[in-house]
Length: 143
Ligand SMILES: [Zn+2]
Image 1 (cartoon, helix red, strand yellow):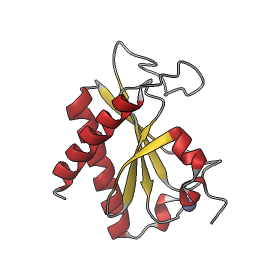
Image 2: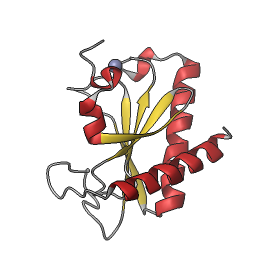
Image 3: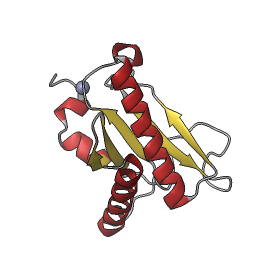
């Protein structure tokens, strides 16, 4: 599956997101674009392209982990709502964008938008978020 952005896990993936932790069913990444503070991606560990290709155990496990990621973001960054998005026309490997939204922040009431308003942090700030989210997710998952 060298054609797959997520299975390849190379420079392109690393240029867009930083790995936070690998869980049983998923791997969690912090988006380098932090326009929505706390924004993450939850990637299914196996290469599948649709939710209906997962068996019950994998699907339940994957969504439980996604919910824990959302809760970790909520507890650490206090958004007003968390948005969840799966598209994958061009990157079909199952992944969910977990996007915290803030009432006085960008695109409240609209879908998230990657085309404008990119927010880039210092490496130390990313590392602080990766450490905090990783610890919180593992605490919530009892890992
Ligand atoms: Zn893949």
